[in-house]
Length: 140
Image 1 (cartoon, rainbow, N blue to C red):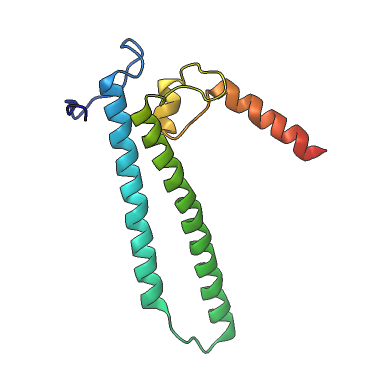
Image 2 (spheres, one colour):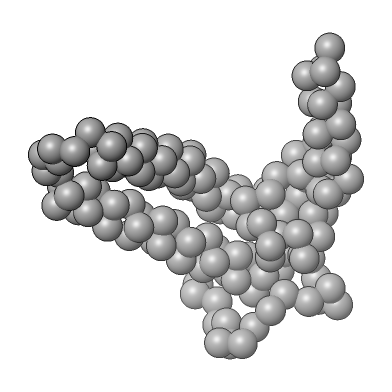
């Protein structure tokens, strides 16, 4: 097990330091763990809210509105469940030493992109190529 890395409170990864050094890896590891904890907390709140709001609503329009709200909330939670899986995958890549590198080209993913989307697996250029190919195939 690795020794704990000291990370100042105001630390932000910089382009002028070695790419994916211990401090950068720790920064992204903590960011991912905090993000996952927020999602799981929101999910618990949703479940509690749904348990509390289960009631018999006599007006059919009000009931339809409530059902629509619940369906939307459940869809959002499903997206977040998938996001948690991607966060777990990013944490595994950190442990395996693969984090921060494009899975297509092997090139480093920019720090700005990783800071904005810490679960990114492709560089911006590779992602754009992927999306263009996807769009072409979808239009066929």
